[in-house]
Length: 133
View: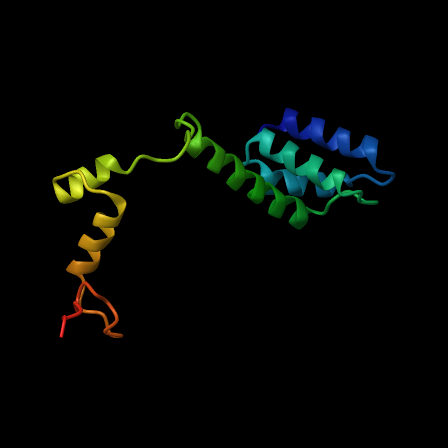
């Protein structure tokens, strides 16, 4: 963010609150916030304003909200451009890759279950088949 953007924010705050920031506060807080993108600072200011505050935010409140906005926009940037999920995923490709053949859902469960150690409760017919007496 540059000084021009910061001055726009300071004027915006002064117009909306009865008591704005002092010049010393504005200078100090610019030094704290100049590394942020102007859009993140604007988003933070607007969200704080929407909360219905009677006084303009102090430096620590504004800094904390700017950090939150930066995280939010970074997450949005990270997922931008990825295809949206559509419908239920088809596990057929994974099953084919994992087991080398096409299996039904129950057959997959049985295969995975059989590869694990025997069941502790001994109710499992896969590990402890019922023997006809």
